[in-house]
Image (cartoon, rainbow, N blue to C red; front, side, top):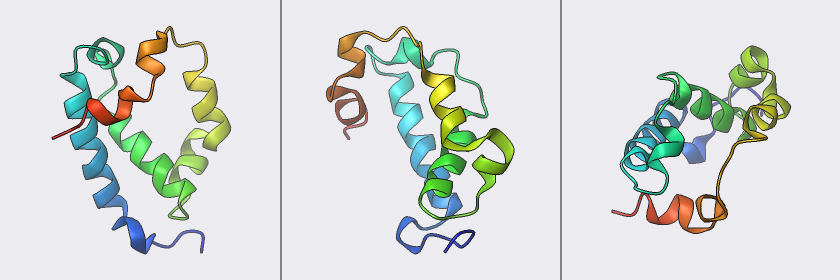
Length: 96
């Protein structure tokens, strides 16, 4: 149901907390840290809104930022290395 809290995610606050922890760890990663060194302080909120939106929560990202097509446009052309794009990226950077 569009606009309702996705029960399986714990809602917007839980999603934002997840990405706060994730990006905090990524910033300290030797490989990925430089990619996010100039990240906007609003990035976590935008990503949390995007994820909540695509999982059926409030459509805040779509309404305020143009939805998934805009997210894709904002990330095309980033000068990432193959290593930065690899499967290691999200997993090892945040491993506890």
